[in-house]
Length: 203
Image 1 (cartoon, one colour):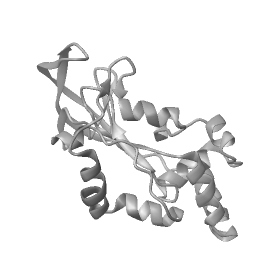
Image 2 (cartoon, one colour):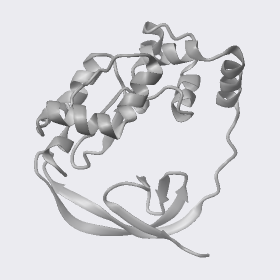
Image 3 (cartoon, helix red, strand yellow):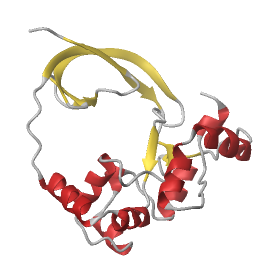
Image 4 (tube, one colour):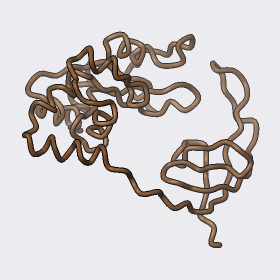
């Protein structure tokens, strides 16, 4: 991981919602705008909050990861729909992230943050037919996913939050459903986590 990847601060861009989203996703934008501004340095990590300093700043400005979005936050921005509809619009690529930051140690995964004001603007840009279609899709019940037997290993971590260290590997068997593995020994692990490896088992 390079120094600049340690954390990216908030970089707001101008233009329409679509123009801002396209610019956010542009490789040229990250390489030619953000990286030079950062001078290849991060903003540091807030161990008390368990996240990067830039992630703390994003929360303070009313931006949230999808798992932390609450209906009260959306209402404050003028959203009149449901929380389920809002999250569906994220998954459908209509309400897109405005910035991203790194998650808690030891993973430091990329976590996308969403601005409720962008949700309201994106919804207003949709036509009546698109809105009706989105509401129907959000309300539809998803068919149950069939699980797949898997086995593998995951890392056991020790040390402290400031200095995490690997202390061993744990073998496991479980059932893969969607992006999660339900462990036979109890609990679950995210299938695409950084410290887990697994393969499917033919029954």
